[in-house]
Length: 113
Image (cartoon, rainbow, N blue to C red; front, side, top):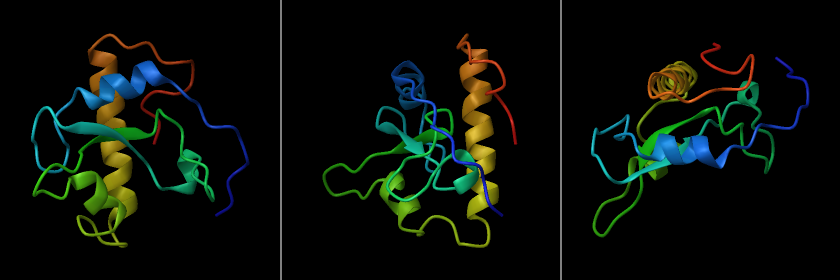
């Protein structure tokens, strides 16, 4: 499926909020990063990252531990068969948690599938 080329949204405040949430994969608190979706429907294309609103918390690498962010990007946590479903679920879950925390999204952005 082809997706129209658009400039993805950028929002540092939103990414910082996502990074405060526990890792969606392992649940550890205090080590999360805003992991961008790798799906074209979220704006990913070539070297361009997806929209910042298509992010979810995954933990970073730390001494002796390979973080879930790296493991997700390398296809270790999810398979190609379920990566889209997991990504969609995590993006929507992060958006809903952000909205519950009082974050205001631009019109037409939050909680779309």
